[in-house]
Structure formats: C-alpha cells, structure tokens
Image (tube, rainbow, N blue to C red; front, side, top):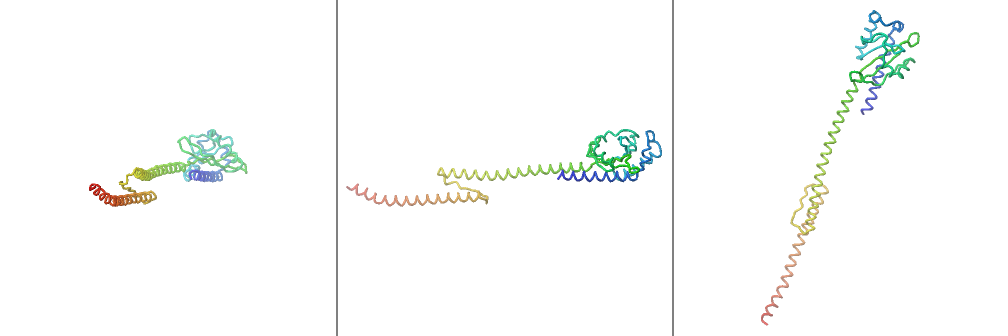
Length: 255
C-alpha cells in the first residue's frame, strides 16, 4: 500500500509540476528572456519577470520557479540571491529529463532531498522561439505527501506491532489454559494408574479436553462402583464359607 500510494502520488506531483512549467513557458517571451545578461538583475524587465513568476509561485504553492539556458545557467529565478548566469549544479543530476525538454517535451525529475531535510521534485518545460527551444522553465515543489505517508507507515507499523503483541499474549493465555487442563488430566491418569480412585477429576471447560475429563471421571466412578460390588460379593462369599466352617469347628471341638 505504501509503495503503490507513493508511486501514484509521485507521478501525479510530477505531472502537476510539468503542467505548471508548460503554462509558464507558454506565457513567457523567450526572445526577451534570452537578452538577459549578468547585471540586468536591477532592470525593469528582469524585475517584471520575477514578479510574474512570484505571483504564479504564490498561486500554485510551489517552492521555486526558475528559467535557465541549455548550459544550465540561470536567466530568471524567484530566489533573489541567484544572479543571472550562475550555473545550476543540481541540473546535472537531471540530464535524462532535460534531454526530453530540449526535444520540446515536458519532464519531471526524481525526488531529491533538499537542504532543509524535505523531499522535493522538479518539473521542466521548454520555452520556444520560432519553434526552437531557447530556454527551459524549472518548477520545484515540496513532496509533502512523503511526510504524510511516512507518518501513515509508522502508524501502521505501530498498530501492527501492537496487534502482534496482543495476539501473542492471547495465544499464550489460551495455550496456558489448555496445557494446565492437560496437566490435570495427566496427573489424574497417573493417580488412577497407581490405584488412587478417591481424587475427583474436575475439568470445567466445554471443549474436547473437558469431554475427555468428564469421560475419565465417569471411568473413575465406574471403577469405584465395581470395587464396591466386588467387596460386597467377597463379603457374601466369606459369610457363606464362614457358617459351615463354624459348624465344623464346633463338632471338631466336641470330638
């Protein structure tokens, strides 16, 4: 779930940034932008371009918008400390994406970690003059969904770990209950094997172990009944034998 959600949100963010960059590129005058040279930062044309990009930046809630040439050198940037002509070193990591841009296609970079510790993504679009690519627009935006997904994943892991701990505890208690009843049955069987039929077998559960305990209790009671019957029969036999023996003893004494 985490992987699929991250993939689709990443793809959607990349397409959104491409759309923003293409919109800016469509409304940008490439001929004027290409005339900018270092030192024009204080000029009216440059300030108007920066103001226009800043308005788009505020409306789209992106972090940064910049325009650069094929040599990866800045032409216009919403970051005021970035002068005209400075090389964007980070663009070297997006060579494959920029190759598509120079072929008149939009492209989006992979996620990258910013200096502030957050992940960002860039969208690029070409600026055309007479159907020729003269510059490109770059749009950076924060991938805030990653922080949300990470919290979601952490919560899922925490919930899963809690479920595992609870499940283990339940299994331990259930198994402990079962083994205790089995130990009672084993102890009762050992007593019966040694001839101790006086201890009652008490198994309160209603499952198979309880059925086995009740069966053993019935067996113990049947053995006790059989012993009582055997003792009664032996008493009767002894009585029947003792009577004639008493007469024989009397006549023997007379003789």
